[in-house]
Length: 62
Image (cartoon, rainbow, N blue to C red; front, side):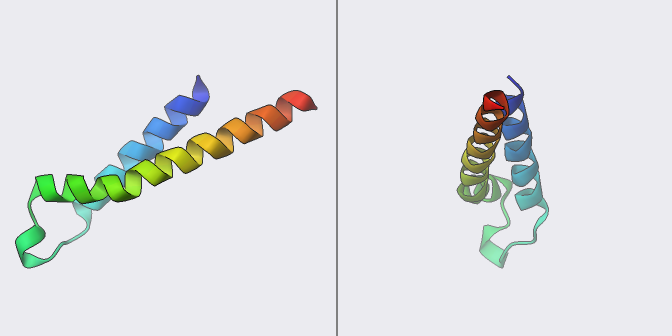
């Protein structure tokens, strides 16, 4: 349960950060920033989910 929650939290944080970063002249639309933010947020979500799942499996084995 906590693994998904933390992963979604990281996903949301990365998307918010991409909205705050200044963009080029023609790409400063909020929808474009959200679309480009997916490029960073989805891999961050997968990475955090994988690492937390791995950590939980290791802790359960001990």
